[in-house]
Length: 151
Image (cartoon, rainbow, N blue to C red; front, top):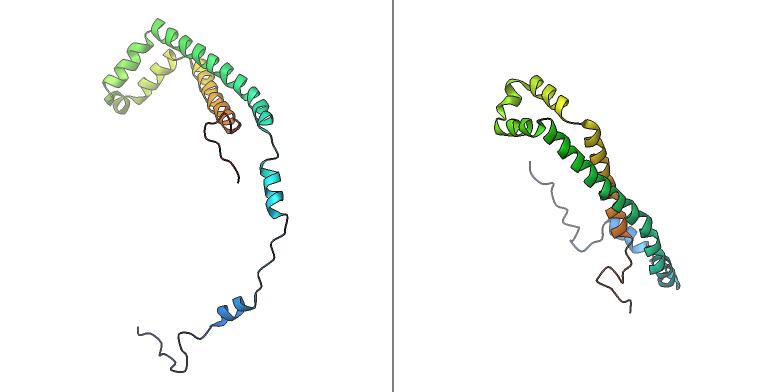
């Protein structure tokens, strides 16, 4: 397919429809107080307000971390008490068990693993992650390390 024939009457410098429309548009004037309004909204919270908002998340995170440690300890004790560690070692030692007899492996794991503790540990881990994200997001700039000055 060949390109369309070129019009010899048009030059490359001739404006097209888009250029003519853009030429008629005027720039909107910037309000005089725009900078002040933007800074007022971004700096409206003080560092003390941000630090106060971080405390509930910090307490929730430490509590969830303690619950996670307790659930992990109890899970380990439970697995050690009823031969669960030997089952886990056997599964990791021979992964072919999962392909040859997956039903037996799932039944054995279901009998040995205390799923209530696994759910508690998972929920605690999610709460630790959530709380850590909220605490880091609310740390004041002065405590965060790098500070920027607006000049």
